Image (tube, rainbow, N blue to C red; front, side, top):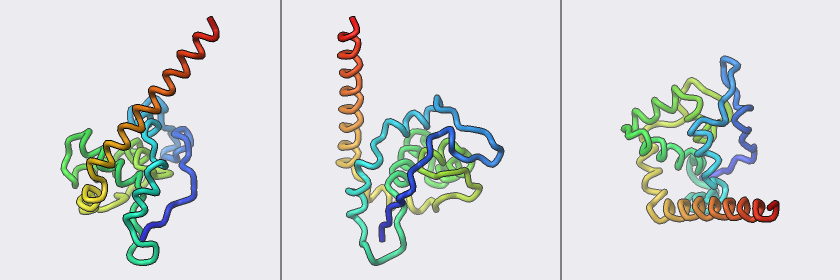
Amino acid sequence: MYRKEEQPLPPPEKFELPFEGKLSPNNRWVIMAELIPWDDFEEEYAKLFSAEKGAPAKLFRMALGTLIIKEKLGTSDRETIEKIRENPYLQYFIGLNCYQQEPPLESSMLVHFRKRIDGELINKINKKIVKREIDKSDKEVKKKDCLQ
């Protein structure tokens, strides 16, 4: 079963931490989270699940984010979950609204994530990120040209 959460994710400075600190918007995980078009692929991911049967699935951002963390850090499935449990930036990256002490998922879930998020989907995501960044760069160049 797949249920999309309708609650918008807070900006990094509103992410709740137990020690009343704030996430830095300059952190690499915060920056990367802003680059990835999570919502653009949520619907495609949701189609892989039944609307009525089964336990609720993890959201696309959690699934893809966890796989990205694993690859970027070069860790095992279990170590990836432990890193996420310990690090508020990683928890923000996978879409949690506030820091939590308990792991947000079991390491065995990564096996399912890898089956559902294949190379074709990763390529689509990468192309979308590149296109968006090129478009943004083109707009900035046109804006500079207009100002000169």
